[in-house]
Length: 477
Image (cartoon, rainbow, N blue to C red; front, side, top):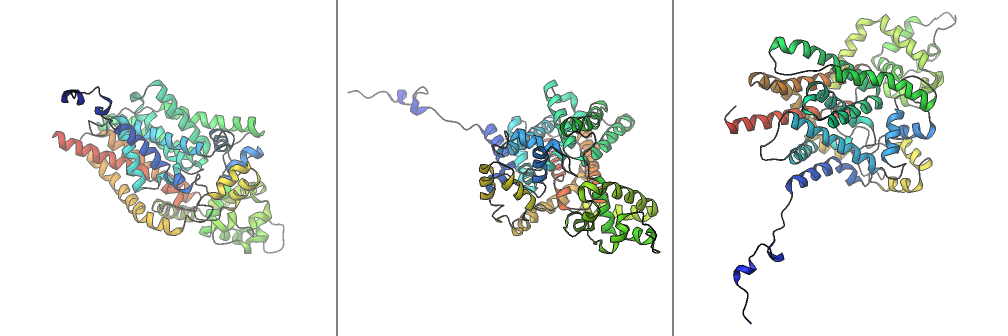
C-alpha cells in the first residue's frame, strides 16, 4: 500500500492536525469571577457575618429592624431562589462587581490596546483580589460590597453616562438604587457625592478640566430611593419609614467618647426629682465601649426598651448631648473620622462565632441549607485570625499606598491632561473621606467599614498606572 503524501497528514482539515486554541480573554474573565468568589469557594459556602441572619429574618418575619435592610433580605431570598442555594447571591454580587469594573475601564479607555474588554476586566479583578479584601465582600452575604458599587455607579452616571448604552445606563441605575436601599449609610454618602458632582459641573469649565459632569442622573436615583424606601416599607411591612437604627449607633459613639456619661452626670437630677430620661437611673452601668452598649446582653440599652423600644429616648439624648457639647462632639468626630480612614484591615468579625446567623440557619431555613452552612470552614472555625494577619500584611500596606496614590493620580492627571482620571481619583478620595465620617464619626470605627471601600483607590491607581505605561509606549508620556 502506498502511504499518503506527507502534505495530506499536515493538512489543516485533518482532525489530528487541528489546533485547539485557548480563549484567553474569556479565560481571564472567568478567572476574575473565580477570584472574586474565591473566599466562598474555599470556604465551601458563602461567607457570613453576625448581621447576615438579621437580613434573612427581615423576610421571614416581615418586619423592620435597626440597621437591617429588608431590601437586602429580599435580594438574598430572590437570588438564592427562595433559600435554595446561597451561591446565587455570591454569583450576582461577583458579576455586578466585575461588570462595573469593566464599564469603568472601558469608559476611561484603560488597558493594553491588544486586550479585549473581557480580559481587561478579568485582569483587574485578579489584581484587586490579590491586593485588597474585595473578594471577602463580594463572597459575603452582606450589603457591604454594594457600597463601593454605589460609588462606581454614581461616577458612571454622573461623569461617564455618555459612554454607556441605554441598557447599560438602566443597569447601572438599578445597581445604584438597590445599593441605596440596602444600607442607610449609602444614602448619606450618595447625597455628598451628588453634591460633589454638582460642584464639579460648576467648577470644571472654569478650571479648564475636560470632563462633562451631569447632576440629574445621580440626583434622580438618590431622590427615587428617598421616596421609594418608605413607600416600599409601607407595602411590605405596613410601616412607612426608613430603615431604623441611626440614633442607636450615634449614641453608641457618644458612649465610647464619654460624652453620653458626661451629659447624664450633668443633667440628671440628684435630688430625687423625676428624671427626664430612663438612662438617668442606669448611668452607672453605662460601659465605656460602643459595642458593649449596643450588643452586650447586660447593657442598660436592654432595660430601656432595647432595639425595638429605645429609639425615641436615644434620639432625644443624641440631640441634647450634641447641643450641650458641640465643640467636644466636633473634636471627637474628627478624631473618629481620621481613625476610621486608617482602619482598613480585612476579616473584621469573620472569625467570630456568629451566634445570631447560626441560629437563623439552624431554626428558620431549610435543613439542606443548614447542613451546607455548618459544613463550611467558617462554621468549623477554620477561618482563623492568623489567616487575616497574613492577608493584612498585603492588604493594609496596599490600601495605605493606594490612598497616597490617589493624590499622585490627581496631580499626574492634571499635568498630562487626563482630567477624567484626576476627577475619578478625586471622586473616590471624597467617597473614602465621606465613608470614614459617616461610619467613624456617626457610628464607631471598624475595619469592615473602610476596608470594603478601599479597593476603589487601588483600582483607580492601577488604572492610572496602566494609562501611564501605555502613554510611555506610545511616546505620549
